[in-house]
Image 1 (cartoon, rainbow, N blue to C red):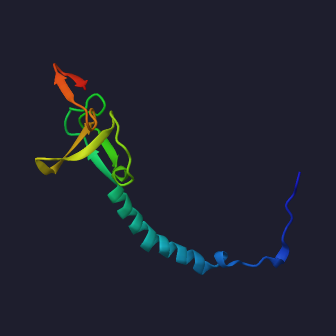
Image 2: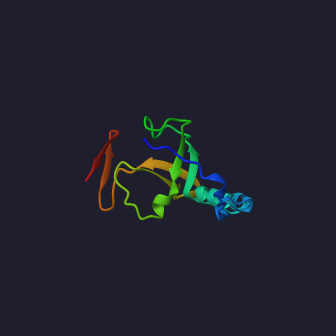
Image 3: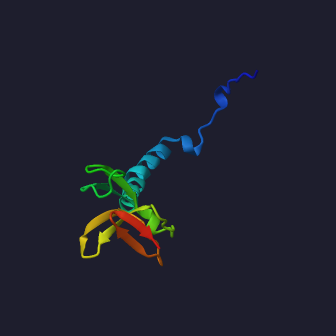
Length: 118
């Protein structure tokens, strides 16, 4: 077992233990890191409320989801079954959320509510 011994009166404050170091850090957080971080989060994520039941039972009407937008930046490969958000081609003010069922080069056939790939 070890015991701690007292340092006595010889302890000296280091540069990080001065009051102005704490004030500088608080100013840095308040005026630089916080605004930058909130803007970064705004561009990297987006909140959505599900308006329709086309994704049921996975996503129900009224569900709220948080979308990770960074995937489009980091070169991630989308796979069958992934859920994606995209702008509706005929009206780019609308965003759709759907599940990927087909990949490039595949043929999709939907017959009697059954999906056939290739």
